[in-house]
Structures are given as C-alpha cells and as structure tokens.
Length: 213
Image 1 (cartoon, rainbow, N blue to C red):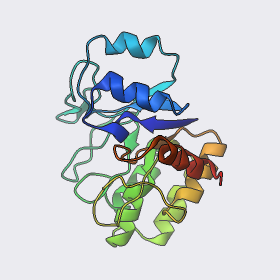
Image 2: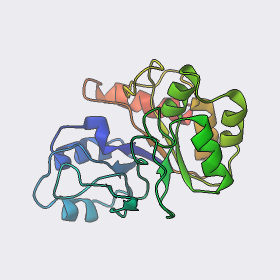
Image 3: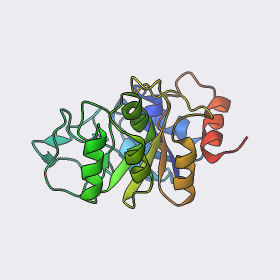
Image 4: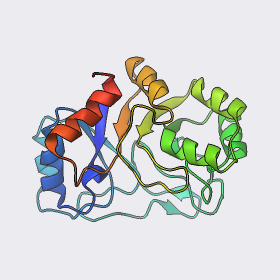
C-alpha cells in the first residue's frame, strides 16, 4: 500500500497536516516533527485512513525518545537505528537503512544486518547518499534490492550529499525498484516535502510512484 509521511508537511499542526495529506487518498505514515493538536489520536482513529507509525512519533509531543541505551523505547512500525554507528542490542524492530553517521549508514552495516536476517526499511534516498559517498557498492545494493526481509520502503530525492527530502523526478535513484516493491505488496512511503507544492503537484508525485503519466 502507498503512504505519505506526515513529515511531508513537517512543522505544521498534526491535524491540519493529516487532513491535507488524507485528501490525496493514500495511507499516512505518522512521523515526528509536527506540532501536537488536542484530540489528534481520536481524529486519526475516526478518519478511516490507514496509518503506520515511524521512529519517535507521539500523539501528544513533537517527538519522543527512541533509544534508551541499546533498548528501543517506542512501538513504531519502523525506526532509525542509533546515531554514531553503534549497533543496537537484540530486538526485532524494523530498522531503517540510513546514511553515514548512523548504524546501517554504510555497506558493511547493511551486509551484517542481512546476514542476521534483520527486518529492514529501505530508504532509497539514504542508499543513494551511501553510494554517492562511496560506502555502499553495487554488489551490496543488488543484495539489498533482493533481500527477503524488507518490511517497508521510503522514497524521496536528494543530491547525494544531504537527506533533503526533495520531490521525486522520473530518474530518481531507486524509484523503479520501489514501484516493483509496491506492486509486490511492500508498504511504500513517499517522504518528499510538500509545503510549497500545489495539490496538483502533490498528486503528480503520487503518479510518479504509481508510474502514471
């Protein structure tokens, strides 16, 4: 199923951002970074919109602590691994493939996670940063693309240096592969910032994911 991240309108009140994105007709991934609004939990529950939760999302706070030592302190569908390249302790939380500075931020970490058969969320924009910075090679990307334990896929665009959550383009790295995973039933989350995009441009982003022209 296709989802858009609440962080596509990061910084706006939760309920306002949720309603704007719900109008696009997809599911919504609840992410940290939006301003809490009273009654948001009930608002989501009664909306009928399918949701997933990510990282340090909380209904009553802009974000919540995810890692306490090696322990994951949240019950989200997927989380970022710890910063600093530190491998977390034993758990079955779905960890997101990141960029340098985090565990799962280089090819060696990704290879270890696959050897251990950890469930992963593959963010193709993060993979692009790893490849541009020379820390993940073609062979590891091929193995990751075929990995049997991918629980979630995230898509947005960037310049290979920073995770800027730019709108997708037809030639965005990993987009064709992400479409294949969506068609195979893997939840796919569009994460590009939409603050300055018109409603028509937002729908065009969804059409790119679905390969509609």
